[in-house]
Length: 390
Image 1 (cartoon, helix red, strand yellow):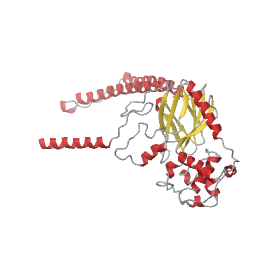
Image 2: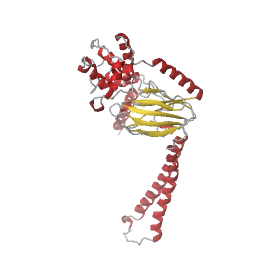
Image 3: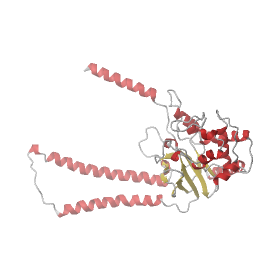
Image 4: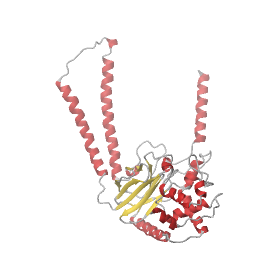
């Protein structure tokens, strides 16, 4: 027995050493998941608080019912078992039993349904919003358009930070430092003011997605061709995280949501800054670019939107086709590649990029035609994209 005990201890020690050597040192992420989190995420909206209360309320009722029903059942089985001389017999069911097991469950359901209905109705009350934002799901990123309220007219795409995608592609070798917000960091977070009612309108460009932020108690499907809405009012400032909660394809795990809640004054300053940036970036679609300038602009567009799938080397990854040496990229007929960028290809494997501006699409096509081993010398102008959209 001693030898078996010694071997067991050695095995457990080895397992502990292995776990320690393979685990990554991460901390709780404020506004996001916590290490070994078992309960729901700490709420920062009234709706989320109500959901938490409802969760425990229903669970306690279910536990009480479980203990009563199974307690009586196991007691009866043990007390009236055959081994102590009990024999089965048929008993007439009293009327009060029939009435009791009909009325009692009905009353329990009422006590569960009333608070649940109250919370559900409140979740869908999107009236009188201070700010309305459309969230559009793309494979695999989110597009945000400020439709109504302060910031109206602003719009941008929110994509997983490239450094985090590179970490994931590396397989996280031993000794790799993993940030606490791993696979949740984005280039452009959604910014909203604290204490304001924010209505989120959801839709999708390709397949079904779902916009979910646990701290807000919000989860709403984004369906192509349909419009759904939800709302939240954050009670505190900070960074809050979520993810697409609908299986939307092979990059589903790389579609995070980051909402930055700021003070009203900070929000006003952010809106002013974003409008100035938008005005500075506004491109004249009739402008004729030089090849050098267009390639430089295209590299930025590629790094922000394409590098996750097509890689920095242009060789592609897995089922993603390579751009380096690709026939459609080298083809003198630029209309073929323009059509792919505007309409997508491969039954959604390559999504459409109509949300990019004419200059951005022209730039990224020109970049691919003149980068890596692709030295075609071809240039695509914004006017070519404008004409193709018609």
